[in-house]
Amino acid sequence: MSTKRRKTSDEPSALKKATAPSAPELKKEKKAVKDKSSKDKSTTTTTTKKAEKTEKKQDAPEPTEQSPPPPTRQKKTPRLSTMPRNKKARLRPSRRPSRILYGIVDALCEACERLGYKNPTPIQAESIPLALQNRDIIGIAETGSGKTAAFALPILQALLDKPQPLFALVLAPTRELAAQIAQAFEALGSLISLRCALILGGMDMVTQAIALGKKPHVIVATPGRLLDHLEKTKGFSLRSMQYLVMDEADRLLDMDFGPILEKILKFLPRERRTFLFSATMSSKVESLQRASLRDPLKVSVSTNKYATVSTLKSNYVFIPHMHKDTYLVYLCNDALPSCSAPSAWEPSPSTVVSRSPSRLGALNKFRAGSREILVATDVAARGLDIPNVDCVINHDLPQDSKTYVHRVGRTARAGKSGHAISIVTQYDLEIWLRIEAALGHKLDEYPLEKDEVMVFKPRVEEAQRHARNEMKSLMENQGKHGGILKRKRGNGQGGAGGRDHMDAEEG
Image 1 (cartoon, helix red, strand yellow):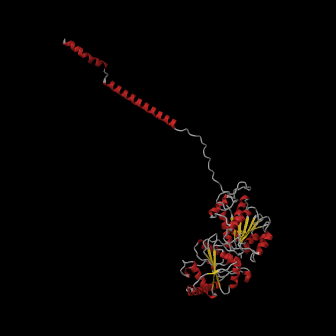
Image 2 (image 1 turned 120 degrees about the vertical axis):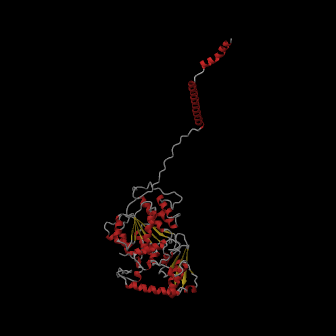
């Protein structure tokens, strides 16, 4: 009986043996289950990601079709070397609010803005539109009113319309003024590749002939040296010239330059435009306009023939002639407080040397601010635009009212204020009364304390002795090897006919 019981109890274990897997099979099965579960997980993740992507695509707004922005083209500045002959249709007048005037192209307006020209002056506003209509012009305006830009801008505009070499000729009475006009042309034409030649007396003619051989667009010259090149330089001709400008025309037409100008006009074509500009005019200008201008228009913004600008304060001091230099030193010391004594001053070389390179060098030093005082003759009276000139002192009164207006016009330029003081002695009363009559009003006397002035007298007398000894040695060594002064050229005429020989051309 017990045996049966054992058989019955052993049946389940035998069944377990038959159905239970072995250990290696169990490991394989577990591994297969793991692989399957990881496969299911990966399939679920990829499905979820795809679903998320689809939802994002459905939620995102559809992009609107827009045309790409057009490529920005950089505006090219017209240049004289690459422009075709007929360019009128492409050169449109500037419509920018910062323009100097309607009718001037953008390239010239941009050059004006770089130079600080914001609004046109009265002479520019009246003369430029007339010049753009191909009319001959006589322009009269006060000193420092922007006459150079008034004739330079129309010439450059016409040059852009029809580029050609030897297009314009500008004549000036002095070398310093001619150099200043050439700088103004180069600055205004800096964006259009302008070629400008400067022809002055006292310079090497061969170098100037090479510059003329390169066919510049604009020639700025003094009359004597230009006539030398017209007569002697082979291949140089102005028969194709389109514009003639005479700056400071009344000075050009006096006894020094009248015969030379008559010869120059014979080398120029009759079919041309002519501009005459000055702060004062004379009857000689009227006679010239009948000879060389065709139906000219007179543009005058001066109320008085000898008017000075309203921002100029003019005074005089009435003193004995023997104390003239002492008062000059006091006035200079008063105008320059930084100079504590006359010995601190370093005068310009132009007081001794009259050769053109030294004169231009002295002027450039004064213009740059390395010199505080410039001593000059009437060479510096005309047209020079030197910034930051606070005071002009007339040590010797000019012989005519016209020269006085030009002298005091070296200050109070372009709307700035300035001061002019004239030293009047007992021998200058008649000249001074004529000047006041021409100005149309009496000038006030400059307040001075005589005791303060006389403090400088001993040092001034000592400086005068040194100056006389130095001038004596210079005159003794004149013309010798190593001497500073050169022998005078020409016929040596004196008196009124030889007035201001520094304006006459050398070489």
